Image 1 (cartoon, helix red, strand yellow):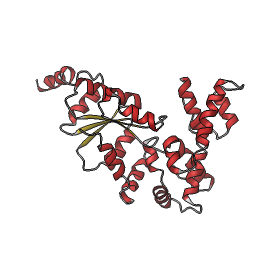
Image 2 (cartoon, rainbow, N blue to C red):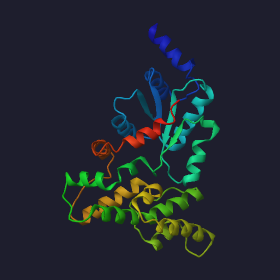
Image 3 (cartoon, helix red, strand yellow):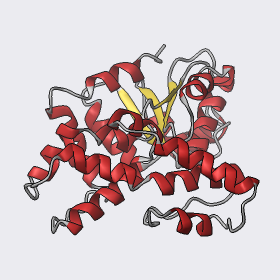
Length: 273
């Protein structure tokens, strides 16, 4: 009887507007804790480390659009509850678009969009990557130079992704060579057309970036880490830093180094009601 009551409560109860029964069950499991819908399982892993000791519960949903949908549904159906929130990557937004999307009334001010391009970008700082690589292979090149080189090697892929999103085309592989002519072929651009002008607009804008802070806003961290690993590999320093599980290590370094995570924590917590 108890199991039947439980099944009935999660299918017809207050969370019945959520179609995914696994998500619905996790919402119930959260108890009195604040719930953050996040994009992926590794996001949950990082946030559990960064927010350790806080009364929060993280539920991986799948992607940015799905997280936004869950926040919207919860606000629409449970507007009087200050329990459900969402955290998503910045992706392709500029500063104004990021703020405007966070303030959309459908989210009830319960959506946080990262200031940096992705969660991974919070690990792309000189001291964090220096400490990480030092535990693997001491480097004989300045870490800042390596970071900037990896970002610059990511420009073509990011420009292509910005273009493809506008055209409704799939993103490019993160291993796409940093070559403009190859990029045009990958994006199916052969002749000088309006399409090429659009692609070049993205490319030229990204090519003007010069600081780590600027790159972190507009270059996807996943692309960066593939390029960074390639640079290290070419130096004879094979480090699989782009693999998902490395986020666990990087998150601990983020906390260890002068509590660098506190600013991110405080800003995310600013949306809590």
